Image 1 (cartoon, rainbow, N blue to C red):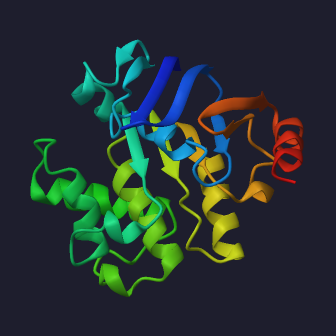
Image 2: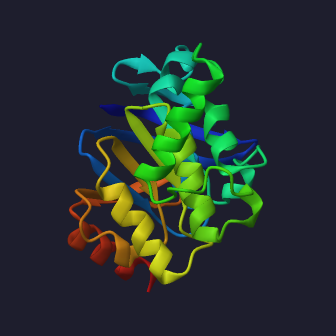
Length: 224
């Protein structure tokens, strides 16, 4: 359960989010909207990357600001550009690096990293240089580095922007199979037909909130 209770956010005099009230219980939720609509800012409040200037965000009753450490242990975040998340030389080392605070032996971290890579389409790539992976493979690596921590919620901020159509579809299909609740920020509307819910934002406000076909119809009318 993710709750936005009167959430607002401003940068100086510029209002980015304005009185957002939402309860997200569905497993697959997408935020869509034009550039500058506030969708990425709203997504980033879920794990405290952005602190609301008004209102509060709760994850299973925990305040994303006051209980930030506990919330971040439950909420994984995948960014638009995987290069911003990849920090180690090889794919296996990068996933194992995510586990460094778990009190595990080096061997156990390596074992879990290799298992995560295999589960998400990168079997045999543990020793592969991370920066020599394709764009789609890098995004899968960033996903693995989050999922190996077993979060309850996965927030993905435009993760398909740098991918070709085939890899976009493969990435979203993989999201569909996850046990975690997924919140996806995207411009790729054609990928959302199997989502449970789509929230449309415009100028910092929710202007539509429905199942995909109805919400996306409203969004297409809005932009035309």
